[in-house]
Length: 167
Image (cartoon, rainbow, N blue to C red; front, top):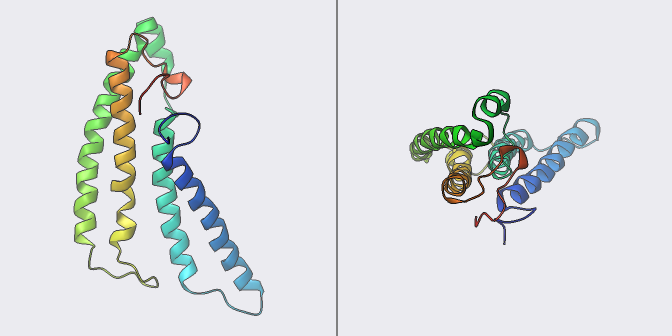
């Protein structure tokens, strides 16, 4: 349901977090001008929501293949086979993502017992944002690489998500 088409799990989650962030920031603003003060925890929660929203948003950008890229040289030099260069770049990025995910996992374990300043959560809940989002990013990278290598019609990076992609 969520892998194909217009909406994805990571995109919906990032959008909901954005709405929550707006609500928390408005609570902070009204707490400064209204007769009642804003709760202390709103500043830290806004920061945590921002981090989660950004990392899940990166997963959505990866799903839509919407990263910044300099296609001029790839298309000029390789012509219709420019997808080979993009696939090689995706493979390198995949290796980097696996390594960063491992580092993120170790960071979550290291911060498991650290308490947040104002929230009733461990700091590991904040640092888990990257490993969780990385699962989505890795999934999208593998699907795009598989599609480019085994499909008769490689994905065009300028067209977003590959057509007929099973993910």
